[in-house]
Length: 131
Ligand SMILES: [Cu+2]
Image 1 (cartoon, rainbow, N blue to C red):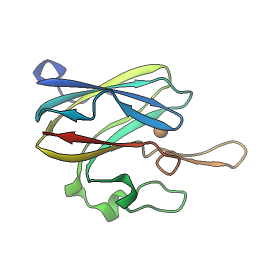
Image 2: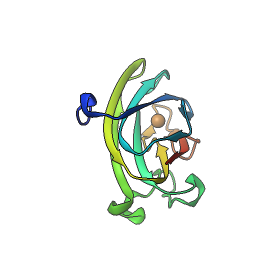
Image 3: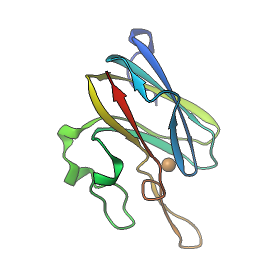
Image 4: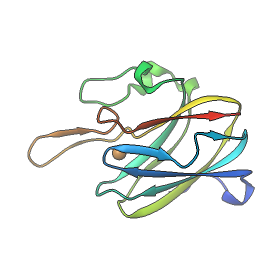
């Protein structure tokens, strides 16, 4: 489900999602109401969680449970584009003030064969600078 009103956005940041990467088209974007336009080119549903952080490696995690949103704290979580299907797009408008943000996918899924796909652990995160 799209978040916010794209017509009010001051800039757009296209982000490509697939197994197992999050790839923003630009690494720096001007502060304002940013329309994050997510393109899921993968074969599984993905999402984007936007957190205030400098480096994905510093974020708390749960074993086989992705990034620990509770441990990180609600105040660090800016917003989220919830999981949406493969081969589709979704977007969200978020008010981003200057700073460093991590865009990550926090989907964790148990496959039919029992394997756990922890998307954040598998590398689905990227850092952007809002200037
Ligand atoms: Cu994902």
